[in-house]
Image (cartoon, rainbow, N blue to C red; front, side, top):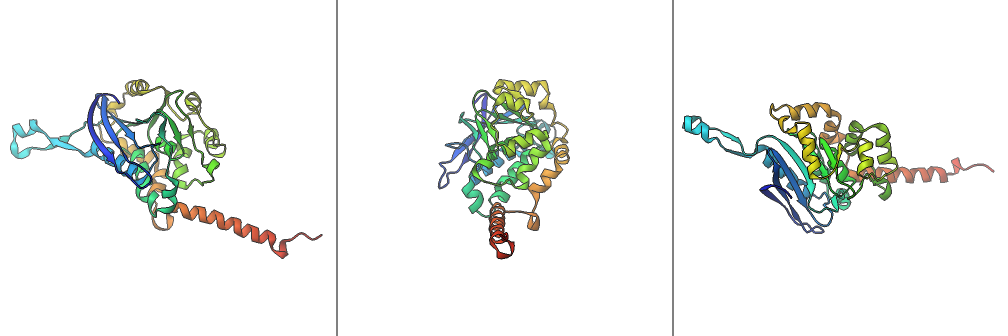
Amino acid sequence: MSGQQLFTVPIPALKNHPGGAIVCTTPAPKVYLLSWTSPPDNRLTDAFCQALLTALDELEYARVEDTASKDKDPAASTKKPKYPPGVVITTSAITKFYSNGLDLTLLLNQPGFAQENIYPLWRRFLTYPMPTVALLNGHTFAGGAMLAMHQDYRVFSEPKGYLCLNELEFGAPLLPPMASVFREKLPAPTFRKLILEAHRFGAKEALDAGIVDKVGGLDAALELIRDLKLTTKAATGAYGMLKEEMYRESVALLDARGADFVEPNMRFGAAKRKVEEGVKRVEGKEHKAKL
């Protein structure tokens, strides 16, 4: 953690998760560092997602009285942003893991888990009105990699972990809102290697593959911010709207409701039924090979 502490958002405990906190500090002017701790590996639970959404809301919407305006005309006093628009960095205070991904049990067994927690969080980052930088200082797997990819820039420390979409290894599908952002942001060969090979990218390899923008720690993230003048980009108020248009396909999938929305357990169930139907066809007398 670095710089002055601005606020803390608690992550409530759940049955299988002890809870934790997200702490906001400011390592440089107009740079807001959100450091999360949710033992043991920063799983994306509903409590984690809601706490992170609250932290993002605090940075965007918190207001204080404009004393200069009040002194000139008390009747015309207004409120100004408590935190001037700048840049948000996200990282982990558990240095082994940026995030080890979704809690699969919650995803499959808690109705509305993705639609009410995961997808709103990813959409919030994808269209956030300030530049966002994911500082990957540990393993970044599955849903953790998705969380990082929905941010604008990524900086990867070495040699502290791997980035991987390992759904192939534990037999899970990628739902459309999960895969879309990788398709929009990455070169096709990298997209294929991530998904169909479950390749584990170290920091330098991730840089060469176009997944991350810089290798290093907080100093590298601050250097990226300085080099690109990112603290100035949110000043006009257009930043979030421009991103919403850039990534409108992903935004539409994250916003899907009703008949257009696919629950994770529905995708698992459909795959299981497909196998069962295929077995029945092969075993059916009408399809048996004649000897």
